[in-house]
Image (cartoon, rainbow, N blue to C red; front, side):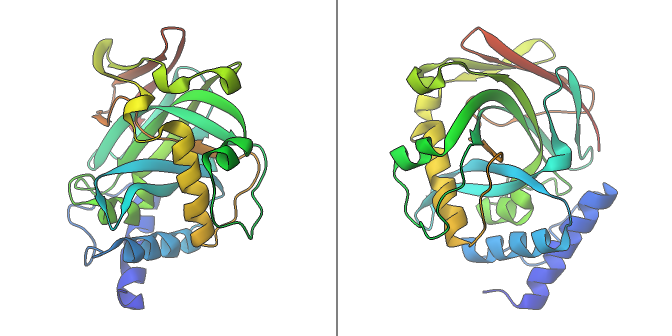
Length: 259
């Protein structure tokens, strides 16, 4: 484990850079050498922040690290919106991207003593599924090119969530087969299906419940899970218009602004 002073230094640097929208051209300390150290930085940064957590993003680790193929980071309540055609900020001198994602709403908190979850357990805790866009952004431009420990250490590279329409009848719908497309400035940038993402949105929820239980972080009803970028991670710039389309029927839009 990194020395506590180093963990505190990196956490403080990221919290302050995000608060002041100041770029970090270099990683602000020693890059965490394993996932445990990375999450220790994330925990320290969460302790420094007084912002309520409205949910958690789940991202992919490819290739897997230490036996894990997913990572997690908090989504803060003041960066969540359900307003159509909204403005979503990125760190203009850092990293910014938009991702089309299925969003799961937690309807019931799990038993705090539960540590292992089946897919059925995870589904039973969800009471709504929506389409949406995750905004991934960090003051550090190299957030996505220096490995998963760097991504984890800065809140998992999350900087906002746009909640779109609810998917009616999701319980009886195979969301894994829905075609998803992401457009930037009206140009199709990426397409995909959730079936190509490990074990899909509910697999992401299963991972998250087990992950948070291991970190002794409580889950509350009403929180959201952003389950992973179906079409990939697509970099954006200030002024870009983003649209995510799901199954040719549901869509959600936002415009990228400067933090």
